[in-house]
Length: 100
Image (cartoon, rainbow, N blue to C red; front, side, top):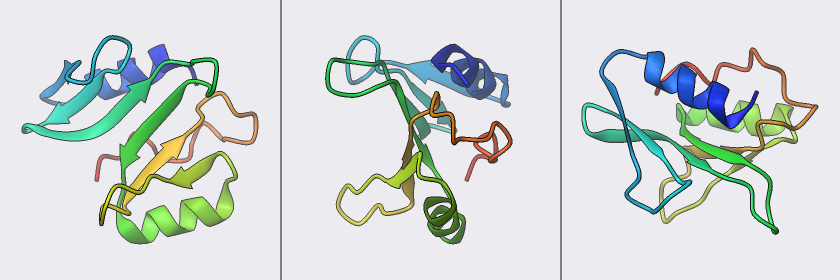
């Protein structure tokens, strides 16, 4: 899945808006004013990444099942996951299109 695919998927959901509050090449996707996904373009130190909000129990399960998915810790927000979308171990049907 490419960053463009992820953006298209996010924008296909009802009432989703794209914004870049963190600068260029770092779009966020909001529903009802709340961020549910963030993209980060590749740099010299990391590949393209998407960070998504997830149900806590599903987040734990996904991290245990897929090496391409890891927790994104920011304070107590442990229900966010960072995914390397072009990792070959990441199946396309993992459920990233299901907003939390």
